[in-house]
Length: 396
Image 1 (spheres, rainbow, N blue to C red):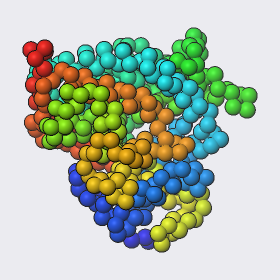
Image 2 (spheres, rainbow, N blue to C red):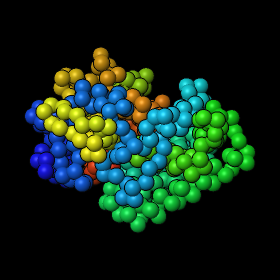
Image 3 (cartoon, one colour):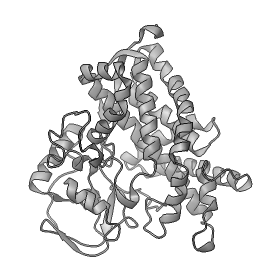
Image 4 (spheres, rainbow, N blue to C red):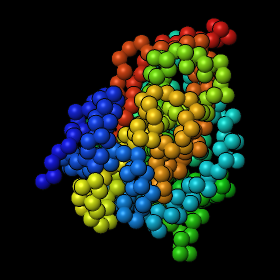
C-alpha cells in the first residue's frame, strides 16, 4: 500500500486547496492519495507540462479524470489515444479556426447582453449560476449550430449533470447525460440528412472524417458531440465566478478594466492562470516509471494538477498575485498542453472576454454580497457567487 500524502476531501475551499498544493510542490511533488480509489498527483509545472506533452508514456485511454464518470464510459477524443484520437480532434479543430470564431463574436455579444439583463434589472444575482450558466449554453448552441430553443434546456440539464457528478449520484448523472445524448443523436441524424460546410459545423465535420477510408462510427460521433455539450458548460461558470470574486476584492483593478477594456485580453490570461477551473485531468502510464523517487505503475491514475502548476513559484514569481502582462504568461496550463490541450480554447477565450466586457460595460461597480460556494474535485474555484451590482448610468 502506498502511503497517503494528502486528503483530497479535506480541501473544500479553493484557498485551502491551493495551500495544500503549495505544500506538496515544496515537499512532495509526486503525491499519492487513496481517495477516489487511489491516484497520484503531479504538482510542479515542469512535471505537469512534461507529462501532458508525452502521450506515449502518459496515456488517456484508461483514466482521463479523477473522479471518473461513475458509469465508466469512454468518449472521444478525451478518452482516446492516437491514432484513434486524431480524426475526432482534427474534425473539431476544423470548426474552431480564427475566421469562424471572429464571425461568432457579434452573436455572442447579443446573447451576453440579453442574459445579463435580468441581473442588471434586479441589481444583482448569482453571477456564476445565472449569467455564468446561461450564456455558455448559447456559446455551445452557436458553435454546434443547435436549434435556439435547445439552449435553455442545455443550461438546465448540464447544471443538473454537474451537480450530480460532483456528488457521484449515478442515477441523476445517467438521466441528465441521456438527455444530452439525445441532443447529440438528434444532431447527427439531422446533419446526416442535411450536411453543412465542415468548417462551420462540428457534426458535419465529424461525419466527413474518413480514417483508413472508413467513416467514424455513429455512436462514437454521438459520444464526441455529447462531450462537447458538457465541456463548454462546466468551466465557464466557475471561471466567471472566480474572476468576479477577485474583482470584488480588487475594486481598483475592476475600475481599471472598466475604463480600459483593451486590457481585457491580457487580464484574461492572468485570470486563466490564477483561476484554472479544472484542478487537472488524469492519465495512466504505459510502463512503470520513477519520478522524484516515487514509482508509478501502469493502471494507477496520475492527475496533472494544472491549478497547482499555474501557481508554481519556480515559474511564476509572486504566484498568488494578479500581475498584468506577465512576461511568461503563455506558459500557463489552464487549457492543458500537448495532444489533449483544450480544442475549444479560442472559443473559450472569446466567450469569456465577451462576458466580462458586457458585465463591466453595464455596471459602475459590483461586489460579492453573500456566501460563496466552492467546487470540489475535479474542479476548483467558485461555483456560486452572489453579487450586488450598481448599473452604469446609461442603464438607470
